[in-house]
Length: 217
Image (tube, rainbow, N blue to C red):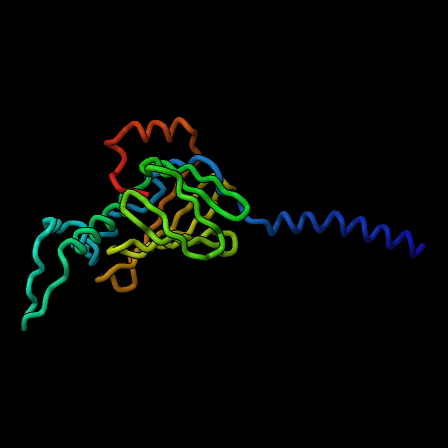
C-alpha cells in the first residue's frame, strides 16, 4: 500500500514539475512586430512643455564650429558633441516601424528595418559594444522577471533603457522607453506598442526610405 502511495506521489510530482517549469519559463519575444500607432503614446503631446522639446526642435550646430565662451574665458560645450547628442536623441525618439526579434536561450537579436545589420546581445547583463548607424553603442541586456531590460549608452549621447514585455496573451509587444540625457532631470519615459507582423512588413519598411528615420536602431 505504501509503495502504491509512493508511486502515485511520484507520478503526480512528475506531472506538476513540468507545469511549474513552463509557468516560470521566460516568454519568447521572437517574431515580426509592427508598430501600432493608435495604441502607442503620442510623443508630440508628451514633448509639449518638456525640457526635451528644446533639444529636439533647436537647430543643430554646424559641423566643426568653435565652442562659444561661457564667461571668464571658460569654453562652452563642444558643438560637435552637442550635435551628435541631439542627432542621437532625435533618432531614438523616431519610432521603429517594424522589428524582427530572434530570441535564443542566452541572447536576443534585434533587426529594426532601419538598421544595417542584426544586433545580437547576450542576456547576462554584461555590456558589449556594437556598431550601429549612430556609431558605437554600449549595450547590455538581461531578464527582469518576465521582461527583458535593455540599456544602450551612446557616445556623446543619451542613455536609453528599454523594457520589453508581452501583452494581450502574447499578441502585443510592449516597449517602455526611458531616455536619460543632460538637461533631462528624471529622464523622459514613453511606451510604444507593436502588433504581430510578417516578413513582408519588414521588407516593405526597408524598401520605403520615407518611412524609415535615418539612424534608428
